[in-house]
Amino acid sequence: MAVILNIDTSTEVCSVALSAEGTVLCHREEFEQRNHATLLSGFIKDCLDRLRELELSLDAVAVSMGPGSYTGLRIGLSEAKGLAYALGLPLIGVDTLQLLAVSVMFSGYEYPEGAVYAPMIDARRMEVFTGVYDQALTPLLEPAPMILDADSYAGFLEKSTVLFFGNGSDKAREVVTSPNAVFVPDVKPLAVDMTALSELKWSRREFLDLAYSTPWYRKEFQATSPRDPLASSSASNSPRTAR
Image (cartoon, rainbow, N blue to C red; front, side, top):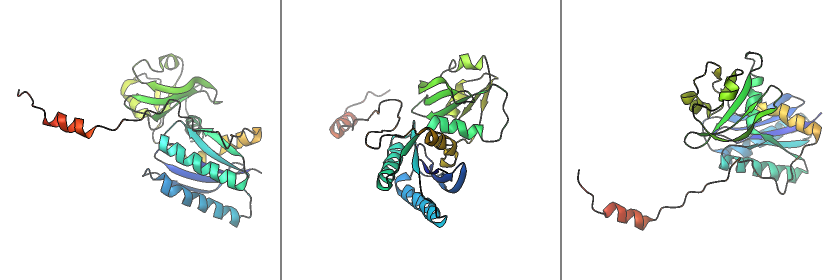
């Protein structure tokens, strides 16, 4: 029986779940704030306290690796690495887009046969991190950043129902108008939904390198240069032409 501590901090939600063979033994979530650095250690402690109460031992630590929030992903992976190293445990990485797809698959809703899954994580402006998966989680569109327009997913929408979900799907709703587009509301990546993915990787012994693993950002980080206060002041004091 594999006992796994699952951690997700890829979006605005911070969540942790302790699982054993598909059964969630303890879980903690916070939906309202981006306060992962403060909350995560306490959530992990609660799950480890429950582990001791049940007189079980931990076999692995799993963490969502992205795509998602740069800051959130770094916080989650750092905490997971530290815990795995301290306890001498393997580290498992879970793709956040697949995690979202699994959340919808296990939600209990019935969708048309042959429907495909298009998880979406919000990026800037009209951009999202996305991919398209079949019901076996085979990638039909490899995960990548995408700038949405009216032709996005057109090839998939011509052939089958496409389920859109995740915190970037509201952007797609603005431009995708096909009758084959179904928008699934309120789907968030949660540690309680990681169990099937983390246990599959455990069974295959697919572990991350503790020293060299990094979040799967899917694109390069773009830092914003600080504004020159003198330039700003000069611009504000320059004469303007009245209209």
